[in-house]
Image 1 (spheres, rainbow, N blue to C red):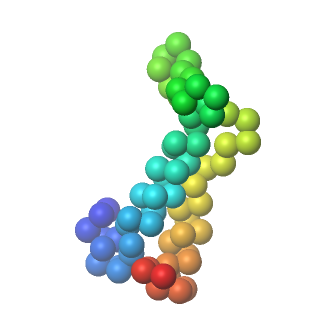
Image 2: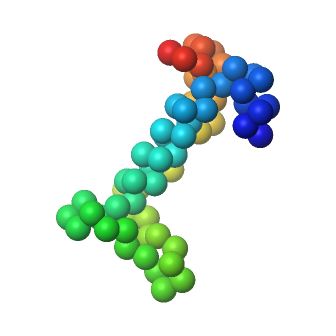
Image 3: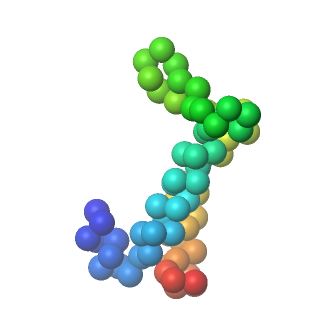
Length: 67
């Protein structure tokens, strides 16, 4: 998939940054820790939003990938 995205001229760093930011937003702001369920899955806090990867792909296609 990475190869195909690069051939299309996509900036994968921008997409990585979106996903990383969303993942880091799962951290408890008071303790800096991630709260986990018994099975180890990180619990998403109230108000957490998934990264808009599709929106970023559309933006890159319309405006250019390194804007």
